[in-house]
Length: 137
Image (cartoon, rainbow, N blue to C red; front, side, top):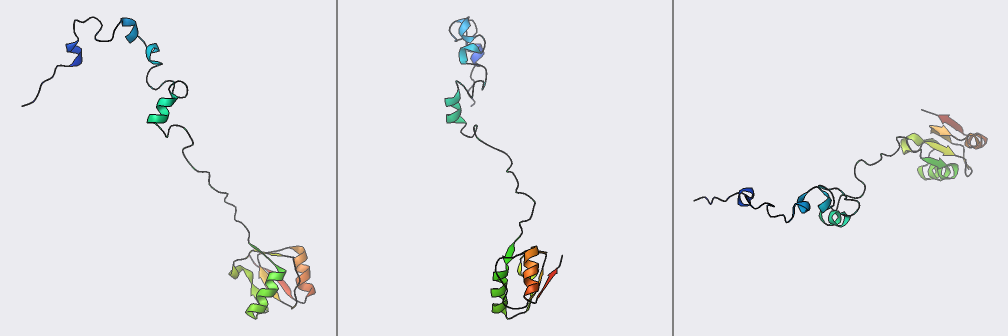
């Protein structure tokens, strides 16, 4: 059997203040520090910290990294060591994952080097060692 309960409003009918004390305590939002969630950043901050811990702080999208590709560079000194290890006189740096040739170091052997970019001084050093600097895109 279902239990029938009277609604609160009908229970309080005829009691003048409906269980709220004096009328001025019920009137307006001033008696409770504003209506609803007003004052969440001021006088109701402790309530927010307890019941809504994610209210403060950053939310939303992350800033995406720049679309610009980072160039991977290699020096002439490293190329010379690489050529001795691989026993090659012709090196394609694009296949090895390098984009740019820097001029640090010297070449001990004439090499044909293919890369996307060369520093001007690196080109001069390669040609003075008797090699070739070929730019491929």
